[in-house]
Each structure stands twice: as C-alpha cells, then as structure tokens.
Image (cartoon, rainbow, N blue to C red; front, top):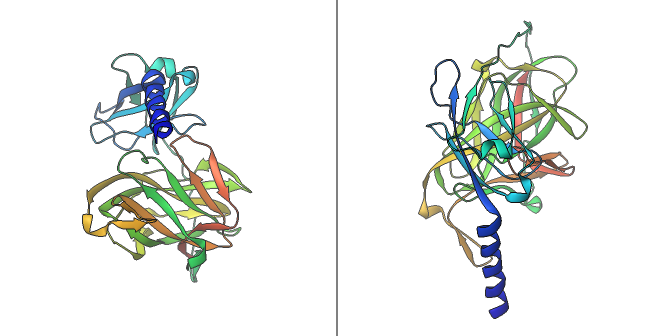
Amino acid sequence: MRIFCLNILILLCQIEIYGQVIRGHITDSKTNKPIEYVSIGIVNTTFGAISDEKGFFEFEYKAQDISSNVKISMIGYKSQIFSVKDLLQKDFNVRMIDTVYEIKEIVIKPTVEKIVGANGFDKSRGISGWAGLYDRKGYEIGIKLDLGNKPVKIKSLHVMIDHQAFDTCYFRLHIRSIRDTLILDELLTENIIVPISKESGWVDVNLENYNLNFSGEIGLTLEWLKVIGVNKARKMNVNNQIYDAYFLLKNKKKYMGLYRFGTEAKWSINKENSPSMYLKILK
C-alpha cells in the first residue's frame, strides 16, 4: 500500500511539474462570433480539446511537446497549424476562415435500397465506446465501409447502443475517404450533429436532407462532442466497480473498426472487429 501511495504521489508531482495548460478562443473571421465544436489537438498525440459554445478551449499537455504542431480544424473552415509555443501566448485567439466548396453535381436515380455495414452484433465481441464526462471529447469510433464504384445516395445512419448513462450525448458525423488502412480526407462539407438520448437498442438517423452522394471505400465515424445530464439510474457495475458516465456500442466481427483517441491522435485499426453501425443507401 505504501508503495502504491508513493507511486501515486510521484505521478501527481510529475503532472504538477510537467503538465501545462493551453487555452484559447476561436471566432469566425467574418462574423466575429464564437465557434463551437472546433477540434484542437497536438498532432500525433492524444492531447487536445473541443471548443465550447462560447468558443473557448483548454487542455493540458506535456512540456516536452512544446515544439510540436497543434492543428485547429472544423468542417466548413480552413485548418490552421500552430506550434505549442505559439499557443502558450496569453489570450491566444484564432480566427477561422470559412471554406468555399465547388461541389460537382451528381445525378443519381436511385431505385434500390441497400444496407452497407454491420447491421447486427456478436456478444463475444464485446463493446466499444467512451467513459467520463470531459476528457474523451474529440474521440472517434467507427467502421470502414465500401459503397461500390458508382455514387450512391446515403439515406440513413443506424447505430446499436449497448447502454449509455447520459440523458443526451452529442456526436459529430465524419465520412472520410479511405485506402486500405490509410484514412484520408474529410468528405463532408458541413457539420452533421447527431444527438442520442436512447438508453439502448438501435438508433436511426435520417440523413436524406443532407444530399450525401459518395462512392468507394469510406471511413464512417462518430466523434464525441458533449453530454447533457448524467442519469444515475443508468449506472453500471463492471468487475465490482460502479460507472455512472459512459456511452457504449455493441460490436460486430468481420468488419474493420476505426478508433481515434484524441482530436489529432493517430488512428488505431481493428481489422476483425468494429462497432455495430451501418448505412442505408439508395443506388
């Protein structure tokens, strides 16, 4: 016990010595209004944050990362790169510049509805998800899908919830191009925010109004943005420990799972297991 307490004390001392905080404020360059849900992260690390409704962000980092790059990004805006040293300036402000997209017109005359993805789950494959209130913001989980060679229209998203403890959990949808296990460019041109309040079971999200037309292999992920209300009645006992802040998805084998434990962290790939999620498409 003494050794355990000593180790904890050493860890806390290290955090006090090496941990510093990066703070800032993000606004739109045209309107000067604060922007919520902007991703800020030290590239290739798990250190990062998501801006709040007033445009403010804050996260801790290790002093040895001071020369590393920090990427600030948001769907619909041009990404910006700074060094950790830049962001240590007092009252650091970022003005985001919106991106103008030239969208090619795609004519699709869909006649057949099809399911693409993991439309079931396997008890033996466990669960995927998040736990905690604030420190998992910006984490993503998802699945690799093949939409085929010709453009299809995405009709709806379906996600299988194992359990969640929140009244409502808010996610941002991402659809990225993907080649083998290399996750490439974001294909969406606007933020699609998905609120989920259901405690368990399938959740259906209508996407028809967004006019999403894609082809080929994609990475479909959900990014955790924020939660509202911890429902104590939904607390969970795991190995004699009580958890009262979590969001969990069921898993399915034979699909590739995509995991990112930070806004700019490296991707982790599971080639045999993924969260249970699928798309309904029209082709």
